[in-house]
Image (tube, rainbow over all chains, first blue to last red; front, top):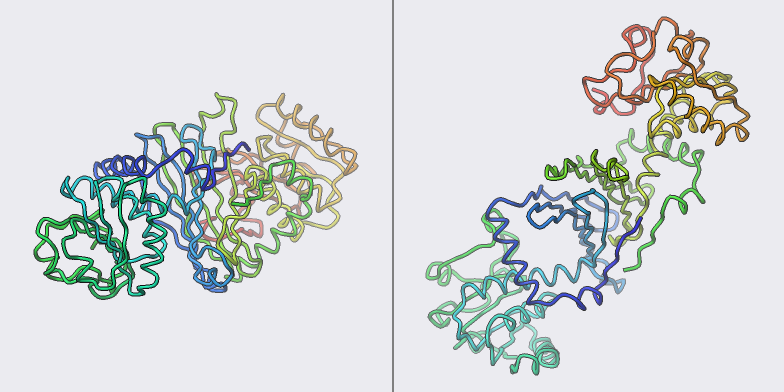
Length: 256
Length: 256
C-alpha cells in the first residue's frame, strides 16, 4: 500500500487558483463533450449523528482521472470545533485500479467552487471590469473573491453581508491576503444598493431565499455569478435580472 | 488529515480468522435483521485499461461502522506482476463523517470470504467432522481452508484441482502453514471421486461451469460450501445435491 497523502499545505504549495480555473475550463469542456463518466452520487444517511455521507465518483479517460470524493455533511460538527463538511478525495491509478493518493477534499472543494465561477467570469465578463461586488461572506466567499481577482483587473471590491460586522471583518482579512498581490482595495458596505451600483461583476454566494440585490440597479453589461442557490426554495437573483439577462448554467440538470 | 493506514502485516498482527468468523456471524445477524444500510454498489467501467472500478459502501449503526470498499477488477494487472483485484477499504468515523482509516482491502476480502463460509460451517456442519475436501486452489482457497480448520477438528484434508501439479503445490504449502498449528494432514488427490469419498465437509471454490464432483458419492450428513459460482452460467454443485440437500444462502438476492 503506497498511497500519497496531500493535505491543504501540500496542495497549496503546488496548485493555485489560476491552475484551478484552467482545469475547470478543461473539465467543463470534457463534461459538455460527454467525455466524463460520472454516475449518480450515493448518499448514506447517518440519522444517529444528524449526518450524511456522500460518495461522488468519476472517470475521465482523456486525463486518466479516476476516483471518488467522499463528502460528509455533519452540521453538529461545528459544536465540536470540527469542519461541518469534511471531505476527502480518493484517487486511483486508472491504469491499474489501485488507490494511489488521498487529498484534502475541503481545499479541493474551495478551489473548485471558486474556480468554476472564475472560469465563467473569464469567459463572460467584460475584459475591463474593475469593480466587483461580493454578496455573502461564508466559507466559500474567500475563494470566490480570489477567483474573480485572478481573471480580471479588479481595483475595488465591495463586500456585503446581512451582518455588517462580519462584512467588515471579511473585508479586512481579504485585503490582508489579496490587497498587495492584486493591487486591490476591499471594503465592506452596509447597503445592497451601494454594493451593486457601478459594479462590473457581482457574485452572490449566500443561502438566501429572497433576491439579495435589486436587479434594476445593476449596470448594463455587468456580469453576475449566482453561486449560492442549491435548493428550489433558495433564490439570490431577482426576476428582473433573470428576464433581462443572458443566462448561462454549469449543468442543465443541476440548474433545473 | 490524520488517517491510520493498515497494511496486510498490521491487520494480521491484530486480527485472526477466528475473529473474522465471529464478526461475520455478527454481520450476518445484523444484515438479516435489516440493521445495515447498504446501497447498491457503483460500477465504473474503464474500457481503456480493460478494467472496472467498484465502490461498495455501508453503514451499520449498531457497530458504528461507516465506509466504502473500493475494489478494482483489472485482469491485465497479472501481466504487470500486480494484483488483478486491488482493493482498499476506506473507513469513516461515523460520529463526525471524517475519513479515519485505510485498510488493505485484499486481505479483508480474503478474511471475509473465508470467514463467512467458516461461520456457515460452524453453524451447520457436524461437530465431529474430521475429513475435509477442498475443490479449487485459486487465490481464495487458502483462507477457505483456514476457515474450516478454525471451526472443526479436521484431521485430514484432500485437495483437488483440475491441474494436479497445482493441487500438490497447494497441499504442500498449506501443510507448511497449517499442519502443526491444527495437527492436520493435507494431501492432493487426482480424482474427484477420491476427494469426495468419506468427506464430512466439502468446499468448492472454483470458476467451474459444470459440477465439480458427483453428488451421489457425498456422505450422508456431510456439509457442502459452494463458494465459487457468482454468474448464472457458473455451477459447482450438481442437481443431485441441490435436490437432496437442505440449502442455505448468504443473501437471497445474491443467490437468485
